[in-house]
Image 1 (cartoon, rainbow, N blue to C red):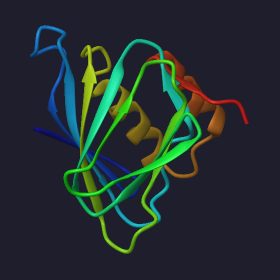
Image 2 (image 1 turned 120 degrees about the horizontal axis):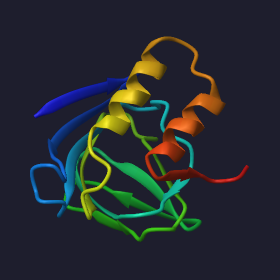
Image 3 (image 1 turned 135 degrees about the vertical axis):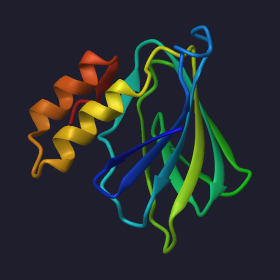
Image 4 (image 1 turned 90 degrees about the vertical axis):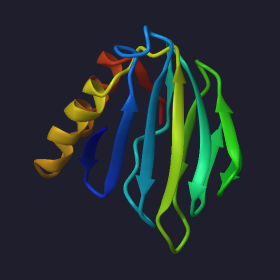
Length: 139
């Protein structure tokens, strides 16, 4: 397991396309209350399934909001704009599975380097996202 910290967020990367023959990427997402989260975006090349483990996260998927608490889940088809936030009072954890496994931990490592260096430039964040197949939503 590789742990990647981006500001207050933590990604615990469990499996990647590299070790699953391209089948999936799987990571645990740890989000403290009020943590800064990525901009609304969509994925070009994969679907994402999220399963709540602890606490609650709000997911806005195609303009509709759903909450994933323990045992709750959400499915995000490729091309659908989404974003998440922890509005609760406790840290939330969720398991994310991306199919197929084409993202890998490199995206999160690049973001972490930029975010953890200080005030990241939104244009630089957007460039990293696009380079890895995440397209920031307009607005």
